Amino acid sequence: MPMLSGIKIVEIAGIGPGPFCAMHLADLGADVIAVEREAAPDAQSTMLNRGKRSVVADLKTPEGRELVLKLIEDADALIEGMRPGVMERLGLGPEECAARNPRLVYGRMTGWGQTGPLAQAAGHDNNYISLSGALYYNGTPAEPPQSAITLIGDVGGGALYLAVGILSGILKARATGQGTVVDASIVDGSAHMMQLILASRQKGLVTGARGENMHDSAHFFATYRCADGHFVTLGSLEPQFYALLMEKLGLRDDARFSGKQWDRARWGEMHAHFTELFASRTRDEWRALLEGTDVCFGPVLSPVEAAQHPHNVARDIYFERDGLLQTRPAPRFDGQAVMPRPLPGRGEHTEAVKAALEGAAGSAGVWRA
Image (cartoon, rainbow, N blue to C red):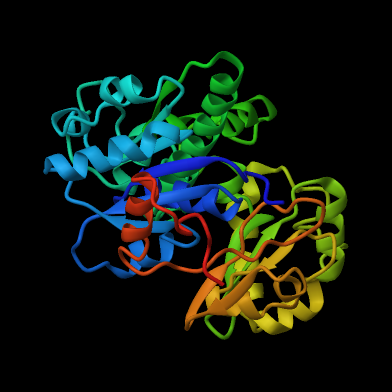
């Protein structure tokens, strides 16, 4: 039985982190009904609708509003990603929904949060993580900080924090009968993710300014360009891993490196040497020498390449369906990888869901094969 079987979630469809959160919960077995506009779907919303039921409604009409209120009467949670105040103006705010279902967990996904001076401002993933501090240490000191598009903000600091908040709220509701409002802000979530970096200051791995830290200036924890234009990563932080790296690179007896891993004054010189060294071979040649060893090595792969890597193939991480490259749900439970349910057509379940709400016989809850 899927882990979240029996949990019903109504999603007011939007873009980015809200739909990703709903997809993640659907991947884990929740019954997610996405309430969408009638406009033609874009590629992102189609992909993120995986495993959901889709209904179309105009929330600016009494009929659309009433449909949502009926849907949440027996739902565990609602997900919305509007600017603060929009759902209230539609008559679908937390108070109106709680009046229909006091146990409802009302999940709100925004960039800046429901309150604060920036709450009403537009923004995107990179703006939110720049404000939270999560962007600061990314990249080398010679270049402007670069965001890992969508990953740190929309997904990491947004969607996944909203998922944890919703599940926490559901546990509370089942224990107390009382729902809650979850204010999931990407600024909040990505700032919370900084706690591990802040803890690293105690070890001296992060000292403050860009370019003075282990991850952005050390030769043994870096990304290098290879002879073929591809890249590889090193993370030989611990002394035993660094010693093995020196051995693999033929530098064990080199006076420039031996016993000088933490000589910060020489990191620039050593990084320059590594840059030249790794540029002398192709990515596959470095993989043949270092991959699978304890030097802490990884090739930088595109998504298409990642889907073909033997480790990812063995774990069945990527799959293709309906001509679309996709990733399987995570995490795994009892060692089993989950095959997610299909992508629905826009509005595919509208009539069946309405019929079920009206008490008509039917199979609105049955998933297509």
